[in-house]
Image 1: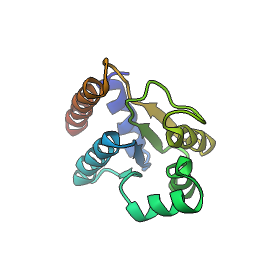
Image 2: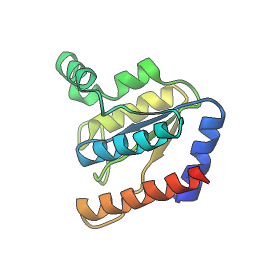
Image 3: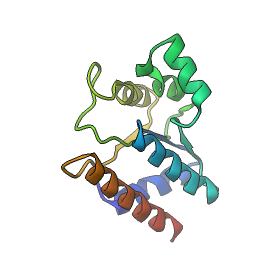
Image 4: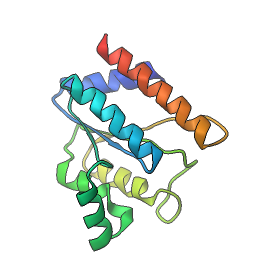
Length: 145
């Protein structure tokens, strides 16, 4: 997926009055929060679901870490919103890596949200994150034009 295509999807989302939700684990969570901050600075509705420690830990403690994002999407997501997933894992599954991303995508689909799985290009975590960060900045530049 190219920066232009993602920027086009985001413009349409914001134009409808919808919101972008971003999720990721570890360094990807930080990139999600960074990008959400850039968008909010320009008064574009974006929320990093990985940013609120009280919400994350209460869901993880009372339910399961697998549902830290899906529960938030259930509460906040609306049809027409977009869920953007950032990860360096080659895939995510119900019982494997990043099960919280898996359940978030399931919940987003149930809420009639669009889902953008950010590309994972590279041989290792460092390369993947570097390419994702460059792509986020390209999208940011396109949205500001």
